Length: 221
Image (cartoon, rainbow, N blue to C red):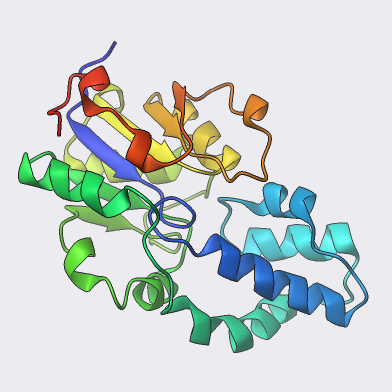
């Protein structure tokens, strides 16, 4: 097992419960056009940036909007809801625990910077614990997940080599990105997504509260 010294986290559906907000809004827009946004579409867009997600949705559901127009419709509804996002089980305790033990941590999210600010607006003290935050519109980011770029960029800014990093992800595209980056990865999948798809994950959990740091030779609780 590699020596882990750095932790990298996804945001949506891993640290914050924003995926339920996203799903409700996508369902509402699809319904306007007589379409159904279901679990299969939700699984295909998980972990991807906003434009890629919108492109997939309008193509699969045959919604008569351009991806950019779809995003405009989505933004009208979703911005008011994001500030209500709450931490998922185990997220605050785990990240605070590692912070207390002086382990460098990063967030690597497909979310754009302005949207990240909305989602975390009620949790600024918590997110101040992270050593760096890489968003999906970072000027140094060439490709989004499932490409490994965002995790490699986070590692670079932490001063870490890939093999020293442990990534926590909920989405399949995020797990694929971490695996492609040469990092260890713990998956915490959405209950709606088939766990058997997460073959590239080193470990699959139901929530971050199940994570045992000592298994990775990290400081225990």
